[in-house]
Amino acid sequence: MIIHTEISFPEYRNLLFKLTYRKPGMRLILAVALLMLIWILVYYFHILRVPEPKIYQYITLGFITLVQPTVIFWTIKQVFDSSTHLGQQLKIELTEDIIKMHGESIYMEIQWNNIFKVDELNTCFLIYQNSLSAIIIPKKDFPEEDHQQLRNIFGTLSDLPVHLKQK
Image (cartoon, rainbow, N blue to C red; front, top):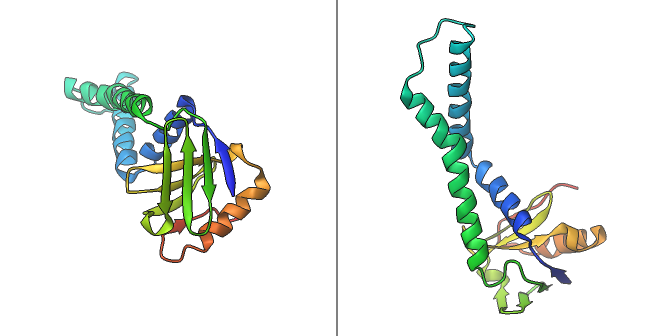
């Protein structure tokens, strides 16, 4: 199976934010921020008698809602800008034995036994080379009928963790 694709920065940014904020630790941090916001609003609207928020609560809320997403955004931007294959037209060839990736400045062959895991999201397939680096295959770049063919290839990988959406 051959797929021609290109990942734009907005697609990459949205994917990385989604992957970052779906982690339990990040959800816990957001829950803390939400509770602090509720506490502050309840205090200022005199809904309940709660202790007056201190400067530390405002600082923490500011870090969680402003600083953290900004740092994540700039990290994503630096990774995208420094990548040798993100943002360029790629030809990805997937067989039952190997993955070949051709681009303007990249040629890579990876055997499936060197892959860490495969995940399917609503918008793309992720083929992880390690716990942090993945080949991104956007679903928009090939027909819906071929999604099942790709799932079949992934289904033959018995020694690999494969997490596919149920159809």
